[in-house]
Image 1 (cartoon, rainbow, N blue to C red):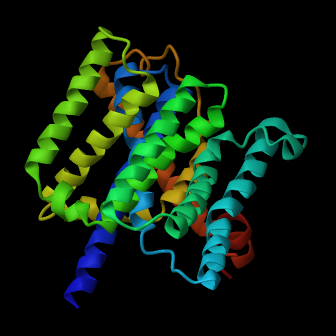
Image 2: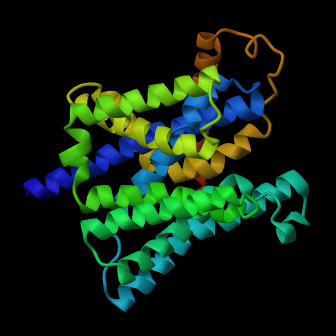
Image 3: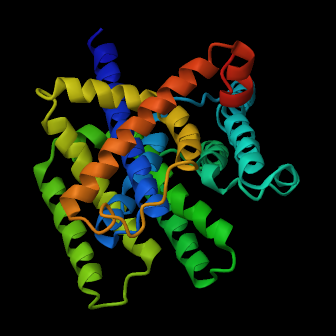
Length: 327
C-alpha cells in the first residue's frame, strides 16, 4: 500500500510540473505572438519549458511498454490515438481557419502542434531502444552520449532541421526515461541540495554569459541543452521542498497538468482573435506590468480552453475524433 501511495504522489508531482510548464507555454506564446518579444522574459521561459515537458514525458513513459508483441502493438495504437489523432484534427482545423481548404492538402499550418508529432516519434524510438539495447546503466549513459553526438552533428549540418529537432528532444525524453528507471529522481535530484545548487549555478552562469553577450560559444540549442537540464533540476527540487505547503496551488497545477494536452491544442485558437499589443502601454510597460498582464491573460485563456474542452467532450464521437479519447 505504501508503494502505491508513493507512486500516486510521484504522478501528482509530475502533473504539477506539467501544469507549471503549460502555463509558461501559454505565457510565452502571448509574448511572442501578441506583445513585442521581451528577450529577458521569453529567454527565461524558453530555456526550460519544453525541455521540462520532454523530461516529464520520458519519465512517465518508463512503465508504459511491456515486452510482448501484442502489448507493443497496443501501445503504438494507443499513442497514435492519443497523440496523432489530435495532431491531425487540430492541424486541419487550424489550417482551415488560417488559410482555407487548400491547407488540408498542404498541411502548412501544422507547425503549432509539432509537439504531438515529435512525442509520438519519440515513443516509437523508445520501443526500439527497449528492444535492442541492453538494459543497464552503462548502456543508458552510452545512449545519452550517442544521442548528444548525433545532435551535435545535426547542428553542423543545419539543413537537416527536422532531424536536428528530433535528436534535440530525444535527449530530454531519454533523460526523463533513465531518471525514473534508475530512480535518480529520489536518489539524486529531489533529495540532494548540492545537485540543485550546482544546477542553479550552471543556469545562472550560462544565462549571464548570454545576457552580457560576451561569448559566442553557445549555439542557442546547445545553450538550451544545459539550461534546460539545470532549470528542470532546480524546479523539481523546489517543488519537492515545498510539498508541505501551497497545497491549493499544487492542486491547481496538478489539474492543469492532467489537462495540459487539451490546453496545448486549444489555446492557439484563442490567440487568433486576441488583439496585437505592439506599441501599446502594455508593450512598453515595466517588467512587472507586462508579466502580470500576460499571466492574467494566460489564466483566462486556460480557463476558456478547459471550458471548450469540457463542452467538446460531451459528445463521445467528437472526443474521439479531436482528442483521441476512447469511446
